[in-house]
Image 1 (tube, one colour):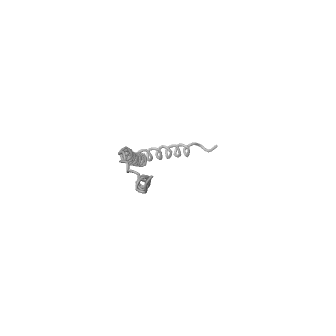
Image 2 (cartoon, helix red, strand yellow):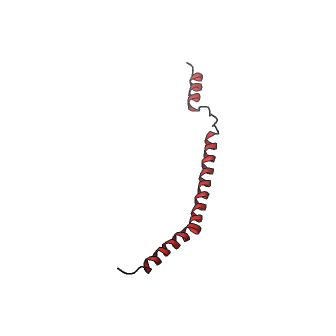
Image 3 (cartoon, one colour):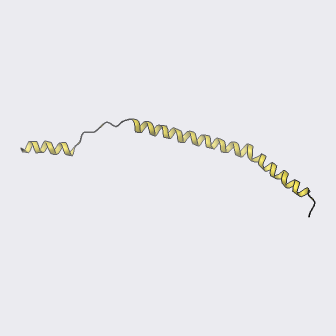
Amino acid sequence: MSAVESEDALLAVAHPKKQRRRPVRRIMLALATQYVIIATIVGLSVAVTLHHLVTPQIVARFEAIEAAFRRLPPR
């Protein structure tokens, strides 16, 4: 084996050819990011809806129950 051949072999081992990355990772990352953003928006809109529409109804029901208990005669 000559010195030139051994140098070529060392260079081939030291610098492997770069493989082209597949775009699957980027596509999956983009889809996951979109999913997280949409899930956050939907979660916040549901929380706001519950806070402004449902919570006052629940509070009103508990206040009505409390008022009914106050009207009961003492034991």
